[in-house]
Length: 100
Image (cartoon, rainbow, N blue to C red; front, side):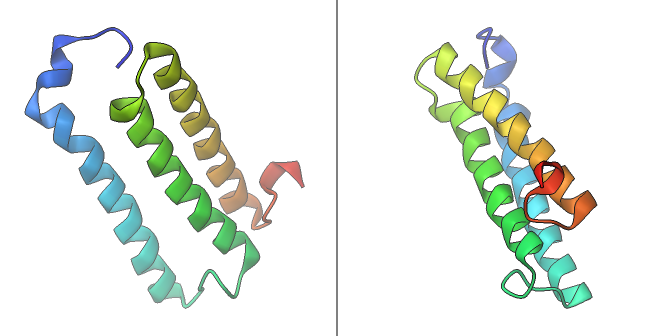
């Protein structure tokens, strides 16, 4: 990503992020139906789903769409911060996570 490694051209590296994102979304949706907790009903869950989609978009820009290495680094850092925020919302069940 930032070092122009030859590994970035390997098929597994190109496919694996899509598989991980798909598993995240499918598991979130299946858990939602299994527990009968829907995003519109619970504010913290709505924030968590929005943050999950944000995380995926930031990851796409960090891995593929970022035009320069500096842009990719910014998107990567933002994705990591978003991931931490998702964890904090999941642990606290509050829309602001650890910030609230």
